[in-house]
Image (cartoon, rainbow over all chains, first blue to last red; front, side, top):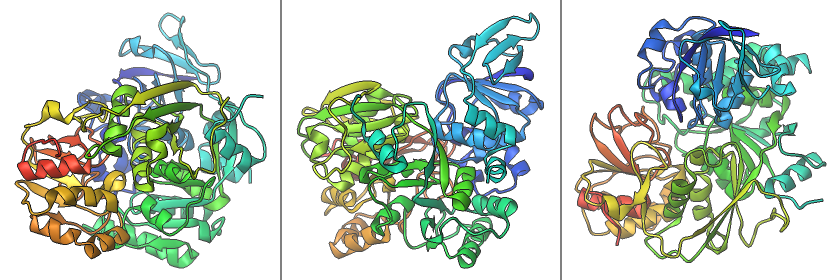
Length: 163
Length: 399
């Protein structure tokens, strides 16, 4: 179960906004996290105030564009525990699983209120309002393989474990 | 039993069994590629996790320098060195700073075959669908894992079918066709799907044109694009099952242009003709082939560009052909800056990015906000439209 405060963002946020191209030569993960979401208009408050464990709720096609894994790594580096989207672009989806950052696709999640504290169960997709204890959304549960990779701590650890 | 789509045929040949949409499978990889961006991260990750363990197959791992070439600063130079040292140690392939855009290099060197599973650190890797390869852009962790184990986890995507009919007439070209498709399908129209292009318009396309189509499947968030031709090895069965089907008639299509800041904000060039432009870029994995440069040269011949004009061949082979056939003479006489082969103006960090408020017509595939300089505005169009714009200094319909 993951519990955290929600930060909301819109549709079609591409990886150039999540992690601007000028920082591509960086290879240090902490340095990368300092530039997370830097190109997203209106993300200033989030960048300043996001806390470990917080949850991002985004619109459709999140992470479209360039294949840079830096995007997911930088978001994870901020301490974000989960990203919930209407839909993810394919490469971002893979990258996020591979680095062990959980993500869920959930229809109509865009209607949730910013700042809500939620408890989320990735195996079932249950999203519960922590204040009321009521289930408010049901995301598509993560597939077994994706869960196994995340639980192993990412793809490489998974591959080594199953060698 | 229903018929199969192209990707279902490739997968059943590869895996020796039928698959279903949504299944997770492990695909054996035939080629694992990385670039000068992504590559250094992969190598560091490889060393951290696998120490001195050997690659799954050194002849199936390639590094292509195509982004910051030659290195623009010390950081990039050091990144290139990380890659070079790794090549020396492991014996994998390296295509150096003079060669050009990765995917184009790979097929020029005959490393791409129908039915191959190919991954690379480039979201436009899937343009190799033009060669019937199941090619995907992935991140550094997928590449690192595949380099060691030669396999990739994969969820089987559904397929959409796009039938395009009608004869297009010059100066309308494959770029106008794919922009028109994007206008209709939008940036998430093919999200995580396999795309099959068919119809009489695409069946008669040459390799260069097929690449232009497949190189923009990513802009519809598609996973892979295949283009039916008379030489296709993998063709869909008549009773194959598609998630959705689209049909377009392009016989009356006019030149198209994507406006700032999204590849699906497409209008006819006529609608925005006259808009002042500061710079034109002709090149990229979408439109940097010889045929693209030739289409631009036909318009630039004997004329002078009124604005900054930057031309970048996709590969050294393309550059050599352009030189041999007199295109450099035309470009240089027109006042163009002709840069060494590579990705060039597809992202910041290259010579030629925009100042705040400047506008550019580009033959590339993306015009996301800030991608080529904060405050810059980018339009996407064909080489012919780009060349006509360079000559007039305003968005212009090519003659």
